[in-house]
Length: 200
Image 1: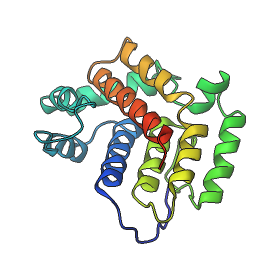
Image 2: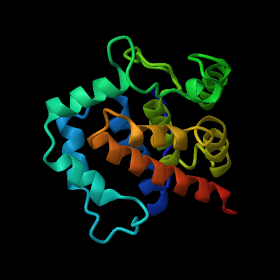
Image 3: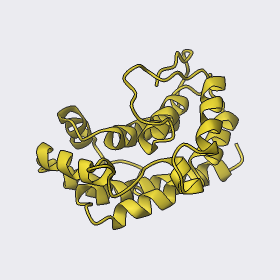
Image 4: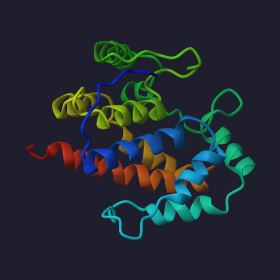
């Protein structure tokens, strides 16, 4: 998805939120690439204020991982022969079915916000990775996407189901490295719910 955000003055907190969403999007949108592995292992968490997030477990799970093994795990979890072990779509978690009303509502909302689906997009917009990507853009462009706009988007399209998805990812039979992704994602969604619950 693409958007043309206005130039924003981004606080350290907003930058951290944006980066974390973008990282989750990269981990969940497709099998881990070498640039994603290098990015994750290069993050310095020694003086991070993010102790609430299991950064060290995420990093240690990928530092010695083989890209082919990660691709096989991703395929087994999310693609499979016909379908993967998990269906990482909002409509499935909210209604039990693919491409239901939550997806239609999301598409209308994305259009209102100025997001467009790129030509190389093959997944429905309610894919967990795509939604994290969108929130990464919004969190990094607070002048264009206000706190209230971000909160409304998160509350309607992400908050009601992503904790359950990450719980399923943690428990999935095929999860190895992605178990740590599930734990990281679950912790981050909990922090975001607290963030949006605060008065700003």
